[in-house]
Every structure is written in structure tokens, then in C-alpha cells.
Image (cartoon, rainbow, N blue to C red; front, side, top):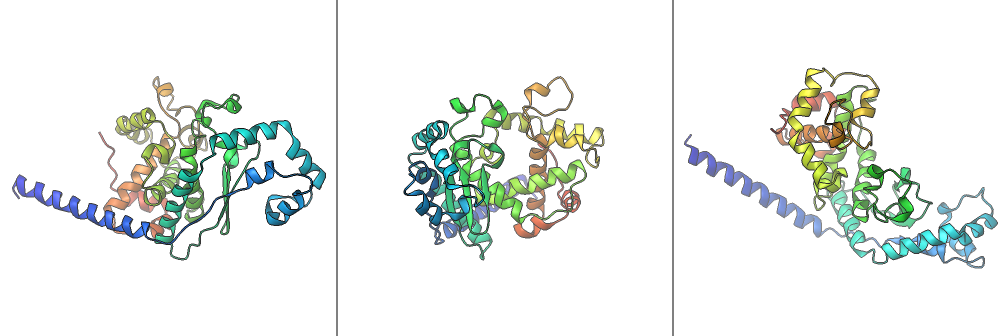
Length: 320
């Protein structure tokens, strides 16, 4: 086939694909989903001994029955909590942009999972417990706004930089998508490095579909420079894994080196300090992207598939 003809065919395919994507996104935008975020963080900070019982009646799931009312009153009056509440209200005074992103995310969920019903979305504060920034159930979604005050906020001074770089409001919907992805993924107990890679690759591809309005940096929680480093070194990383026969290795230490949050990825090479952490997740993302590109399969089915089957059928080739 002449080169000019090949070019025209590719161009037509791209146009057709873009038109389909645009049509789908228009259909998603028209879905009737509209949530109003409930600012429990403000309600609790403004509560008094007289109004506390009403708040506890309205939000019983936010109060442990094993804790006496006097303890909750002391927490309301606690100086540190009051300062934290003031900072939250200062940073998140206008929550409309985030609320719009959450609504758009839920519209995508409704499109791909027609039985999905939007939950109540409630913001709260928990003295910066960044291990549980968001919490989701079928009926309630909780967002800890004290973990989204901005990476350079004074309250985060004792938290390591690689963790607090994602304490930004722009990461809220990405963290929500992560939590919802975990609910929808089935995978046999993860044993090998490639199992871990594919698991997180599934989560990141779920974000590709559910929050396409967010950048790749926001989806994975990298800076622009970190994502650029990952892209430029993708081929070298892949060769590293292949040459050392790491993909099927079940050594638990590999998860700590290549998957878990860390200031950098531990290749045990000279350039380690230049790399971002979690590069095993990034590689898994590219494998799953390649699988979905080369196989005609629905999102939900892919999320249930065995990791090795996805890997073997992905035809993954790292970018040069």
C-alpha cells in the first residue's frame, strides 16, 4: 500500500476515534447526576454544647457511640482543631470547582455502571490522618479536607515531601477514583512484581476512563518533571526488569522498591535519586493501556481479569 494511502487511513481512523470519544463524552455530560457536598467539617466546627445533639442526630455515622458527648465538646473547643478548621475554610471556601469534578466523575461512573447511585458526599477533618484521605461506601463518601490544604502548608511541615506533594485540592477526585477502582477490581492474591504492576495499572486505567478531564500527572500523582522522567526512561526500566528476571519474582521486597510510595524508586543504580517513586505502577499502567488498545474488551471485564492474561495479551512495547 502506498505511503500516502497508509497515512490517509491512519488519519481517518484517528478522526473516527476522536468523534466517537467526543460523542461519548457529550452523552456522559447529559447524565442526570447532581450532588451537593455536605460540609460536615464546618458544621462540626460551629457546633455548640446546645446544638451538638442535633448534629449527632443528623450525622450519627460520624460519631462513635463509645465516646461521651463531653469528649466531642472538648474536641470542638480544642485550639488545634479550631486552627485547622480555620485553615480548611480559608483554602476550601469555594468548593464549587471540586464539586463539579466530583459530579463529572459520578456521571462517568453512572455511564459505565448503570446501577451506580451517587452517594452522599461529606467533608470532614481528622487531624491530618493522610492514610485515609477518602473513604467510600455504597451510600456515603467521606473526604478529609485537612489533607488537601496544599503541599507547602505549614501544618504539613513534619510530613515527608513525597507524601505531601499530593495534598492538593486537585488530587481529590483522583483519590476518589482510586477508592472506587479498588471496589471494582478483582485479582487473585498478588504474589509477583508483575501482579502488583497490573493491579495498579488497572486502577490508573480506570482513572483514564472515569476522569479523562484530569491530566496524567494528576492521575498518578506525579509532577510534570516526574512524569517526563518516567516516559523518557520507560524503555530502560523495562530492560532492567527483563534482564534481571524480576517480573515473575515473588520477593516481597520488590513491592517496596518499585510499587509503594517512596521519594524515589530503588533500582539500586546511580540515577535512583533522580527518579520518582512508584515507577512499577507507571509501567503497569502502560501495560494495561496497551492491552486495552490491542484487545476489544469492556472495562469491567478487564478489571476482573487475571494479571498474567492481561500481560500476555497486551503486546506491550515500551516507548523509546
